[in-house]
Image (cartoon, rainbow, N blue to C red):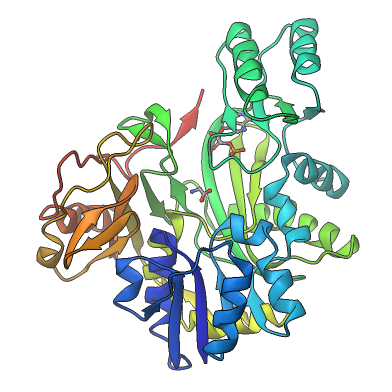
Length: 418
Ligand code: AMP
Ligand code: GLY
């Protein structure tokens, strides 16, 4: 099978790593990929949202399956374009991907499906949102409706901060639609499942570490590390999350004639009243995927291929015993203004047992340099949680670049929002 993987982050390097282990693989192409994916296949210099360029490459390289990583490509209609061209693609159509690309749509679907989630009110005009906040006199989580690259949510601590958040997010772009959402509290967990439009197969529940600094302090980031399986979610709770939050949404999307095929990601808060959905994503998580791939046994490529055809085969994949931790090594200035161009050394010194997934990297004259905020994800997998964490930090130890920073407590804290 010839495969085109679309995307260029750590998530895509991890997917490429797992896909390249499949006996069913003939050639793996990644567009645009990164220096990590180039070691596993062929990178094609085509942007993830350049649909015409991707379709041309799909025909030129006789691609049998397209695997879509990033949400922007899904929202741009890459899967729809593949379907129209008669090419099999793993990922939802743009209509089904609205479960991520429009928070207002996601809320409507969740409410229709009876899924536990915070109450929310939608406003086309930020002035009206501000008036509503003053009238109710309480704190609300403020969210931008559309895709905002992880920058579209503010969790205020006071009424004043709520009003400031409405003003800030309301001025992001003309006609910004805002959501005001009831503020929940509890630890968070990411549940990612393959979905064939009807059935679901869940990967181990994972914990993301969104805050920049140890102890869950500092600003939110795209994710400073991940750990799986989350000690907060046993099999019974995972089953509850899948059956009370994910399955009803999958049924509701199918009922609306826009079945969801792809990786469905539920961002769950474990509140005192039970699991509640913070968001759905229409794709694999980053950096969760980097921790999940080494914990997944079986043929991922075949599983994605069958799933994309609406024939989920749960027998193709299993959870490996044990745990995995992913430490993100970030660039100077991340997340506000990451610096690029710093030389990376020490990757060759990483010991057996550790896996390095590249994200924001580039080769200049044969030498690896930083090229983005989250530069590398170093993963350790082992029989025990403590062993996995230790392996990941030991593997990261030889790696360095100017301004490199990372959290030292991945897998050891429980992310909480007060
Ligand atoms: P989202 O992109 O919707 O997942 O939001 C990003 C982060 O904001 C989440 O991971 C939570 O930490 C926080 N958050 C989102 N919604 C809520 C909520 N209703 N109550 C409390 N925190 C929230
Ligand atoms: N790690 C969260 C996400 O991929 O959105």
